[in-house]
Length: 396
Image 1: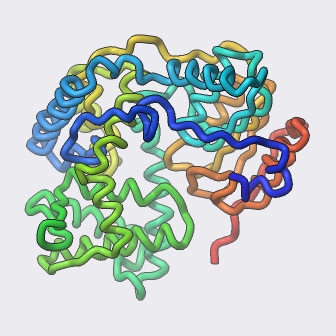
Image 2: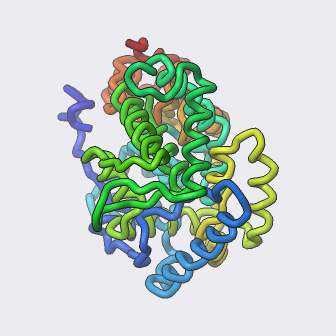
């Protein structure tokens, strides 16, 4: 952030916070055998039934290991923690930059402590009505669009990746890999480091690769899917160092603390249905149109088998003069959610980045227009007179 701020950095003390139960703030760990609970329901009922058993077990592990802490993992409590930090710093007001889910934290803090915020930047902002377990299902249309855009990119580079010459061919090839993984899990790597990817895991890897649209990010996903295609053909494959690290992060037990706390926050921030059949009906209702991603975003989670939240979500009932950032193709925080938040906060301004399938903008995407608007606001505290629109970098 200091690099992104440039000359403005000297005007601020930069304070990073590990939220409660995260990192060095007394991290919780449910002792999961995987890094993250997010998984697909697979191609049919048998895989979904296995997921019900698996997700129920993850919830039971959390209840056994940290059940007394889970009710206090919500964003309301983290907002109260921020105010404790503000007081400890001896500041009457603090400025705030939050990215992704932390935009909800910033919105909650401003709602609960309205007189204690100065400048607020909400990057890749979420609709505060769609937090908690509702977060993933809300992503489906944008996720599909980002997948289609990536497929177009891959089709234009078929000579390099061999994934297909058209969007339809690329998408069909990915789906064929998922179906092959349902018949026989794909083996990636060898020895004790080998990872087995079935039809509940391959879509997770695709999902993880769709957070951004840079050349490097799109090439990484193409490399991974080309590798899985070879594995589906029965060939031995060795992942790159970056892919091996991603597989450990998603599916390795060493990442249990990250997955545990992420899920704990989601479950504490919003109620989930406790009826597995309701999830199955939603999957089946959307499967025909979205065969790859509907079984993932609509699947059961540990929240399905946990307790209901101790507190209600924070409702936006007071205006905040915030600067909201959003890309029109963001596959994690839909742009329509940022538009909705802008309407809830009439004193705010929305910076729209057109033509980008990107989650996380300020100081990381490299868009001079977005960074310039943010830095101007942080320098003088004045919001733009209107909602600015920026344009993504042209494709190479």
